[in-house]
Image (cartoon, rainbow, N blue to C red; front, top):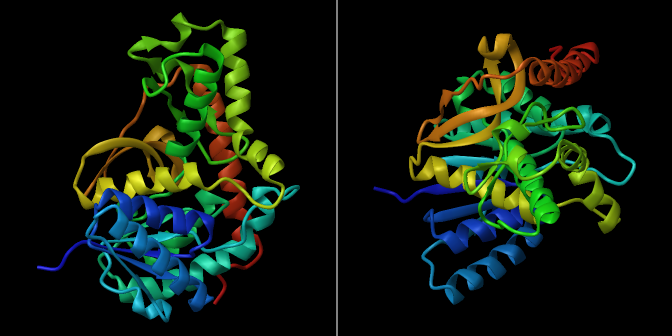
Length: 316
């Protein structure tokens, strides 16, 4: 019986940080790196392998010479694509990254036909849609990384405001991974205490706005790229949930099929992740205000999907 194998397509800051996180956790036997610059991938593989030895972990880091060599994986993480640079909206990335996703999935669906796919590239929700359309797979096997990251950002801003509770803050964010995401203070707690018992609504609304701009703030500070440690850790948590059949509930981007009243559109909602990918989509009971905000977020993703069709992206 072979060990668990994870492919990572794209080994920039996010991809290599996912590999590092997985190597340090020892949750899989092999991590396969694939990049256009094979020498760069080899260099990172050497560095990561030596880190694994230092940590006395059994994870082996290898390099795929071609995309076809990313084969027989249990999970494939897709970080390949143009990064979001200062002044660039997620929408600007749409066609460019959609084509990259389409090309990658055309190969992966053959080389790793039983894999669970975790897209990370932006605009995230549209990339999940493209991956599903290209593979024709069941929606349970393509899970977008976004909600865990956005929820972690919200938790950071809660800690920043409170000054206590680090590690005990549980926040929830739904909707698309963009400016119309829907942070949910009503479903957020600190050691089980509702956020609304600890902060005023003015303070909470400030946190909500900072959460929506969390990624852009980091882009502005770094000046030459975007966040990668938090996105990578969020991705690694999803990979580990699949590999260990963890049955954990995480907010992730999935294709909706009637949930919350929407179909044929991708959005971030709470899901239960296990060995088969998304094993359950959970419908939270939203109030009218949350429902309206979620509808707006879904609408924004639908505009991206419509833009793909308007640009004849799926024309043969």
